[in-house]
Image 1 (cartoon, rainbow, N blue to C red):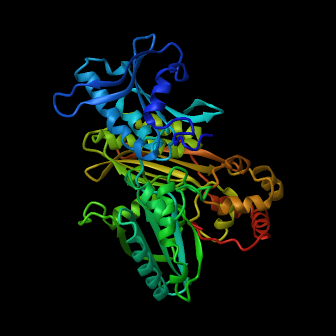
Image 2: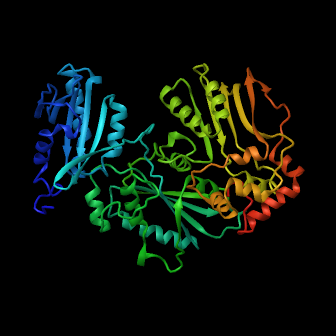
Image 3: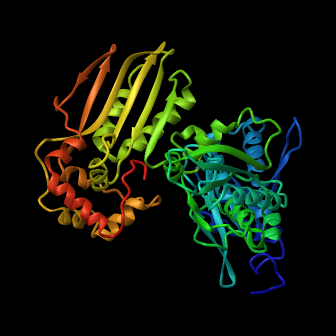
Length: 517
């Protein structure tokens, strides 16, 4: 590699890289013909634009090819592409569907996600190519753009830090505020919890979260933290490396930590926060860094809803895996489709649930109606059996779609699981082996907030089957089976088996009984 050539050791600057590609368009696609380099577009309403390379394919599509050599230059790409597409349509009278945008960059850390958003919104084909060195030549590797329904704002990687006393928590929070002053462009929040009077908990947690960073701060962040962004691989939330690295540096207290500081740090998740609220009260939300002067829009309720991630409206980068809760109006089409699609995705683990819910939601709704969505996904039936031995409120997975008009229920669909009244496995040990592999993995899965596997075979093995109730004109109609049996009915009739399940699970260690544990 020629160290004197800063671009991949092959080129002196971005212009040389552009010219190399322009002379070898087959690196992008076969049978392209060049129209021009630095092709100028006229703009009667402001500054024009210069397309790095303008080409045409055999099907008369135009290719706007932009070449970038760093994250810093990559950030300007979206503004340029938006201008080029607009000018090609308004000044050159090009049909939008015949415009193709190709972005070639040596760096993609800052570009891939916003370019994916541009591709979704712009209505033109967008191709992302990673420029790499291949021996003494250049290679272009096609990257897959991110498929998403909306651009999330809240980083899904949060820090949950526990303190022995409220005083040590408050002193540590002052240190976090001080370190955050080094990154005034970061928007963070620290959520303070205290034990409820009825709780036996004696610790004082803080949940620290961070919102999406604006472009242009990567170099500043790296100078402050003393290393390259993304070095601490693997990340709990890939694609959020700048936000995660900034938050981790700010919350690393080091010598500033109080003497009674207990470093019980863990990744915070929406599920953990929901569980935390059963034993702790949220007492304050401290805003840190780059917040608007007034908080009327992103108030405390909005922040908590985003963290709990029980609906897609909050802007979290990761949905709550256990709970869904949202109200929506069909007359507000954009948010309605967002909520409906997110809800159908949430219940899609059961194809029958998904089919019934989709059919119901495809119906017609009055413009004045409000629809309430509630769903709970219980992934671990064996754990629920253990809980149901002690708790009357333990419940299998369910969903509710309730339609209101002027506060009156007019229609609805309720889905649940009902025991068939007969089925009970002969061996708890055999069920654990079949569903999880062994009891160790069963316990790991039940305590994991990042395990994406499903264990729905356990429902069928225990005779838990989908059941539905419809509401029409305010009247409920029960589908098959007409007689429903709960998890408590199963436990009551199969005491020996349920005790065996609990004993096996507890052979690894104590197992909590709280529904949200």
